[in-house]
Each structure stands twice: as C-alpha cells, then as structure tokens.
Length: 164
Image (tube, rainbow, N blue to C red; front, side, top):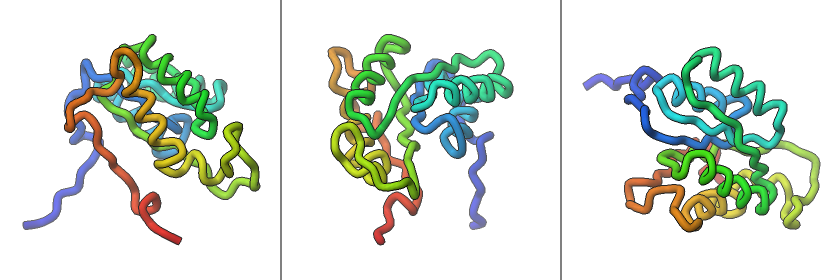
C-alpha cells in the first residue's frame, strides 16, 4: 500500500476548539497557528515579544480574516511568565483543546534565566518549560486543558528526542 502524505488540508474542522501555540511568532509555530486558524480554531499565539506577536497575529489574519487570533505573552525561560500566561488563557478562552509546545531557543550566548537555569536548556526541554506550561494549564480552579487521557498528546520532532 503506498504511503499517503498528510497536508494542512487534512486538518479537520476546528470550529469551537481553542489552541495555544508557543513560539507562534515565526517558523513552525506561526505556520501551525495559521493552519489551525484557517481550520476554524480560536488560536492564542504564545510569544515573548509583543511587537513580533502583533505582527504574527496580522500575518495569520491575512490568511484567515475571520479567525479569532490573539496574542498571549509567555516567556518559557521564566516560570512566573508561564503561570501568568495560564491565567491569561483562562481569562481569554476558559479552556484549551490544543496546546502546541513549539517554542525554543538555539545557539544563544550562555546566560541564566530569571529562575537560575541555563538559557539554552530552559525553554527547549520538556522538564524545564514544557512540563510547567502543561501543568499550569491543568492546575487552575477550572482546568484549562481537559483531564481525559485523550486531551493531551505529545508530538515531537526527531530533534527534540535525540541525544548528543
């Protein structure tokens, strides 16, 4: 049987679903946000830089003019920012159906995060940023992410699972 190639057109209707995409101001994150918006999802663009977030919102709206697309300030290298973003998500949409942990940094000068972690490590590993994002979205008075086993899935590139 020949392999089939999955494309954006295979995304089912996402109307009524809320998504948060981290690192949504460029690259894969921006394209993921765009595809979800075109498919009808309410999309929250998780970004560090407000100006780049605003530009990304406008970019997505060019392809999905009627979409509900909003920025959410989040810096994955700062645990307090992650917790604030979770509160913002609750205020904006109540709960998430999709959490796309895309953001990361690469080849930055050595420096520490506000929480004392090495910057290269903090936003790019599941233990130091992605787990707190997911846990923050689940731990508020009203769970932001659904609690059923089917509510959370990890989709990763080979780069995130490889070892040096």
